[in-house]
Image 1 (cartoon, rainbow, N blue to C red):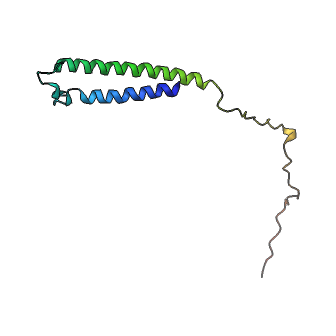
Image 2 (cartoon, rainbow, N blue to C red):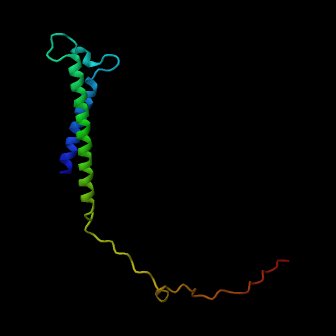
Image 3 (tube, rainbow, N blue to C red):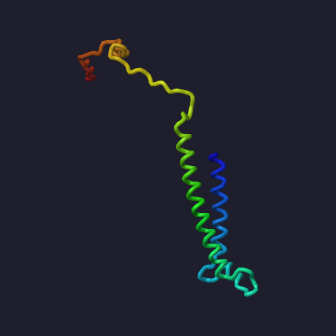
Length: 116
């Protein structure tokens, strides 16, 4: 279901891009070609239709995004892996390894031989 909704969002986004590109901008845009008087719909009706279509697509994308978030959170409650990580038991002082040196450490520093 998640993939299906994602595909619908992608299609709505592409249609919205096309609808915005066709709308009349300050400089005229592609919608200025619809200004001939012998058309069924006039420029004003085309502009209204494109604006309503754009807002409808925006609403559809918002609803689909909320649905996608719902499906994403419901799927994240399941464990990602079946392997359980076991933490090692903490070491007690009695189980700690013996780190005392095997050879005795000399406490006196030997005298250096003098070469005279």
